[in-house]
Length: 140
Image (cartoon, rainbow, N blue to C red; front, side, top):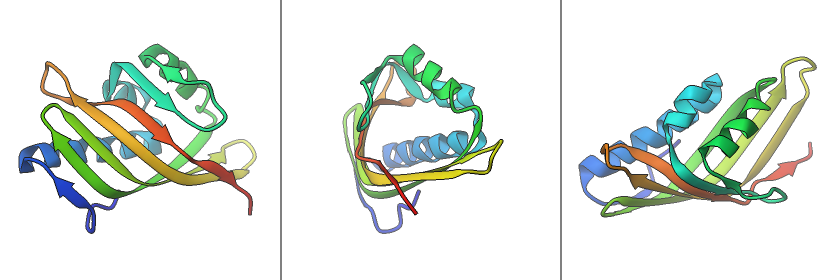
């Protein structure tokens, strides 16, 4: 994640907390830490991606992530804007994901744009509540 040139609006402590959550998401994706990813997701999450049915709820997302166990993932989110309003945070940016199949070494990548909505929950933690991306697979 690169927040250097991003537009950041909101209370500094909330901006820092949301940036930390986004960085934690990237790190957990990179290391394949499903438990850490699930801790970052709201129970009622909804994620939308091209060519896929809506991923609704933490259990649905967890079952999809389990199918990624045979992959090494390298995410890249180039944050362009983060706006915080109360207990909601809205971020958008360039989104890229490269996947390497461990058994064969085959590489697949997808790029596009993403909108991420986080919610500060009752425990005070920011969690990913909604996500929309336009990532399409690139061919080399």
